[in-house]
Length: 259
Image (cartoon, rainbow, N blue to C red):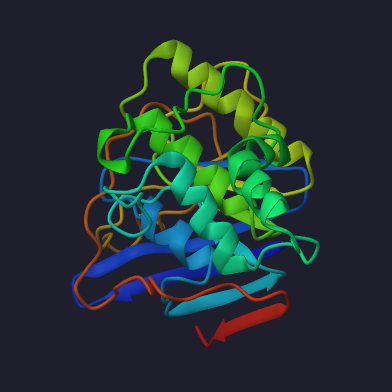
């Protein structure tokens, strides 16, 4: 398994953000977290990627995790073009060692986006204009760029938030197919969505309300469930802010909190 979460929960002074989450994902699997507004979808995804705290349960992650698009946490730079985003990320990761000549470096920059798209399995009708700036990208384009950038570090786990937000039916169909191809390349892919498109082979986990529940009502859990359309995620509690600068490492990470 790439990610293993058992009894995972986050509680703040305002109550539960999410609780009693059991979720395991292996390479080649696409998982979708759905649920109503304020059910903790975004916070759970960030926790799985190591960018958000938890207060209960056990989390084990085998290998590196990377974020796709997560509004307010991991978004395109408004001034950079799509091509510049890819080139900048590749430079941060370190260029290949065989770029000894100026011509080779020019070719590397010129072909960086096409190479990145091909590496992510996103070929044919990709809705990205290399010259479009981050501020001008439509919701589905932000998601696609986020996925492309996430693959560049070759992580084992990729997470992305609200993948169907602002997308029309044809865009949703294209994006879910792209997510399935990404998983088929050997990643574990975990996303949040309002609903899973019919016919998509995703393992669905539905979160219940995050508010404190009365005695005897049972916990709000994430478990496989044919969910219905859900509302948008809300801002996390001020006590539990995402660790924006954190990066997943290529190692096994274990977080265990006494319950």
